Length: 186
Length: 151
Picture 1 (cartoon, rainbow over the protein chains, first blue to last red):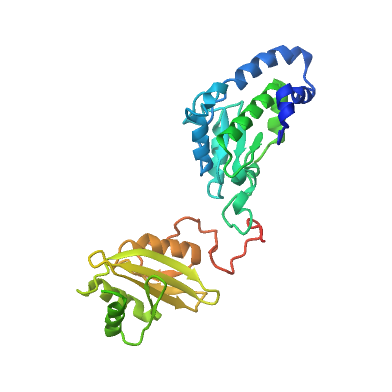
Picture 2: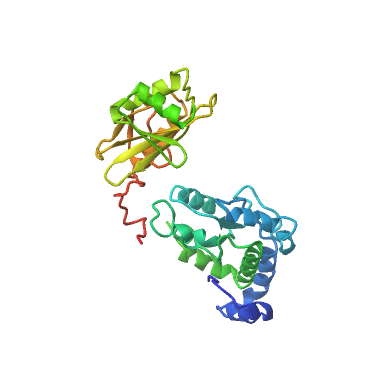
């Protein structure tokens, strides 16, 4: 399931969380899911991956003023094998696409993708008349959360990452497999 | 030398060149066969000493393809722009200036990569950014219906 937007009120009073929870959770698995999801969502380690100016905002989000680490996005990992979430921060060109795909493939499960900024969502300013830019990173890897902006402010990225945490809260071990099967990008 | 002296100096090397004072620099339009000899003289003549090629760009004029050279002398701090063009779009070929300014090596590879202009006597004319399956994407008549969304 992909969250593309959420109203402020819904975000605050947890109503949408209940809505997301009605996606058919097995009762036997609920408790263990809760424990696992609690662990997963509170230690989301992003990959050090930035292809363009969105990367600067991502760095700002990680730095002292906005301090990503408050929410458990504790530390940027330099290796895709240790990372949980890849924030696609910037333009992906056709030459970069196989590299991105490989990075994603080499990440260990559970893995999540945040498309940050206009370029990663749709190609953004390079959508028209561009020979080199991939029109949206979802053509290459499955995206969980979209963060709009050009570039998005660190607050926006933080919001997006919190959305991702809420998304993780609603997942079960079972649906994870189904999700992966539905995103077979070979 | 200022622009007027520079213009006279270039006329003294080759009298039939079209010299125009542009917004910023002196612009000289050079016919294709003369380019290399003129560039070499601008580099080597004692009073010119254009020892720095600070910009080399390929241009698609629509009907013609061309290359623009921006030269500066680090000794005298004067600048001249050389413009050349060819109407042959199938096999555009220019003389390489890598033997005069080595920095042209990568510049010319870039121009070849994106516009498909070949440079004679270039030591290593391979594509720079793109692989061989691409056409020449900065040409005006480049068409790619799969990857480009046209306006």
